[in-house]
Length: 441
Image 1 (cartoon, one colour):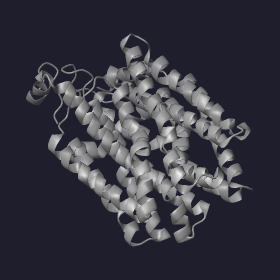
Image 2: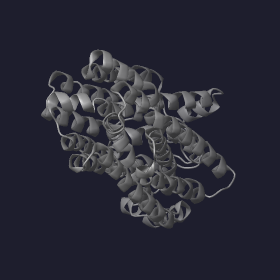
Image 3: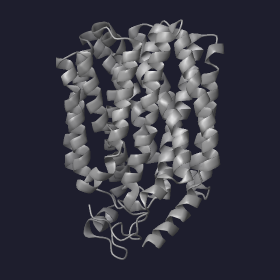
Image 4: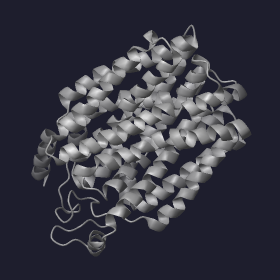
């Protein structure tokens, strides 16, 4: 996993770059990472799917269910800070394999001991093990793609959430309908463990691991920027302002949307499981379309700020307006449509802001920077599920509770996105951090 030297790439890098099939390999390995992200997203989404039977079996309140979701995302956020240390202690190959095996294992106790305590412990451990995964997966994928072309691979990884709800969750809905919620958890645990086999057989790092361009920088000798300057930069803080409310929406959708469809809008359990995929169709189109256009625009000379800051921020503002309008929407199908559009616009922002973070830090600090950014953005997931549970328990009707939740998220998201536009400027902060790095050196 050695980085390339300034004048002479190492043998493994020369071998990767000289292979005519290297681009096919790059996208094949990216696809493997997308699959893992889909499985981890299914781990999150399945909790929303089994919320109703869990509440009935364990006699839980909405607040308790919300607390469980928030504890998961708190553990997920804390686990994200482990991405940098794991990347230093282990190779990407073994760090990601270890994480996948661990999160398969921590799913199992809930099947055997179905209690509220076991649920809390299982979700906490799952959050800790999944927390570092996203940053490491992005780092692994970025090792096969140049900085100007990282929007699409980042979008494909993020689309694992969408793929999970389109392709995996509906299947799990059938499994749950036929065999109960324990079977859905067991299937997910087995799938995550089996994924490790092709990963260990096929993975090796690409030519961009730790470098901006092959042969132009040495991650071992390039000066580092003090971490406080990265995390206190206006681009980093502006990105967080944009994505934390968006993540709040994603976490509420993952945990509560099937319940909203069933208890709020009156759809059946099976219909709710299938309709859970609707926002994901919109999200997938927005993710891929937005990221392809983003990469092309950057390649044609558009500024990163315009393409990967302003554009996704506008999407979040539009999403906020849609959520604020929910009480005035006259039909339940139009309500589903509005939530789906808001979800799609929000989720499309994630790969663009993540790619922006790779612009402001030295290559050697990429995994750590992404780990901190992704960990802090998941604070939205700590707030969203618990706040939703509290609102639902105090609301006059389920519909009123869900609508108020979405309106609050919409208002916070729109204001935060406006602030993000005023703060974030990747070119300015990249230049500033390079100057700081040279002074430190």
